[in-house]
Length: 255
Image (cartoon, rainbow, N blue to C red; front, side, top):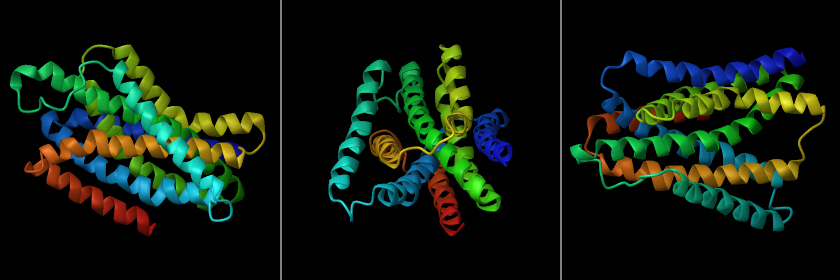
């Protein structure tokens, strides 16, 4: 049973890999970038409202102890600030360049930045999600399988977005490969770590890590993706991405 539970977390990561391969079949990368940007905005909003926040509230339960609400707010703020600080390590990151053809390199660096910080936050999130899938699968293989498929559904488009964004920058290929590898294996690494330790993750620590991820997801959605969606709101690809994102979000809610 342990090996099957671990295998499910590995399969979840492979959805990222499939997503990263899809852009090779599209000639117009610019249109695909716009579509996946708006699609990912909706998907991360779904992740924030219907996945992460309810899970944090269930784990820490601030209704029983109001001090946990302070913990959630403080570590969510920490996650937000961590990505804000990370801005200083990703050069040439600006929003005021999309219409300027002569600033193509700046445009590429901007989307690389979005892909990079999205990948970092999802790696942290998936470490914990892998643990959840592993624990669920040990108690019920059917429930674990459904959970893995649900997670895979939103990993697929996120894999497209991250690859499209980061691959626009031709430098740092080894760096990109490392990020892609960690992203694909993050769920498995989380589950395998718990398997080696042979004990459950402390609920308090799990709540803290999820709160940090919550702040990161909020930062990406509001400070990175929303400006791009708003700026290009008249583009057909943005509208299609928003509609597809809403459809997938509704499907995931109903699962």
